[in-house]
Amino acid sequence: MLKSDSKMGRFARSTLIASALAISATLSVPFAIADDDQPEVAAVMEEQVNINTANADMLALALDGVGMTRALDIIAYREEHGHFKTVDELERVRGIGKATLERNRHKILVKDESE
Picture 1 (cartoon, rainbow, N blue to C red):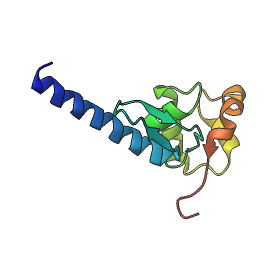
Picture 2: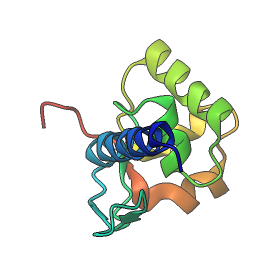
Picture 3: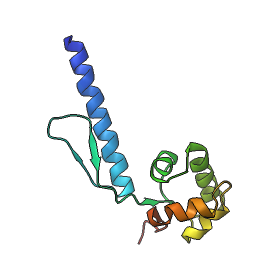
Picture 4: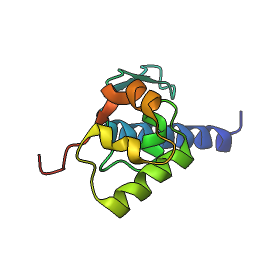
């Protein structure tokens, strides 16, 4: 392996770890990095996401059956109507039905930042 390849590998691992830290902090998902310095992130799945503050990437990652398009729809609804007051209000978003809501109910938070 060339030295430049090694530096790039360390940079990529550092970037991956920093991204995992940022997502973990926002999603309230604690994680641990393996001791052998591999970019493996062992997430302890608490997996809750605040639909009033999460960005599209976080919503798509945390919610089962919600891809980037639906995550953007959640954000558009939030921007147009204000913060969600209840989890059930998520059903008003185009493409989010009862099944998707029930599958994810335990993962969804609607807290205000001030709480």
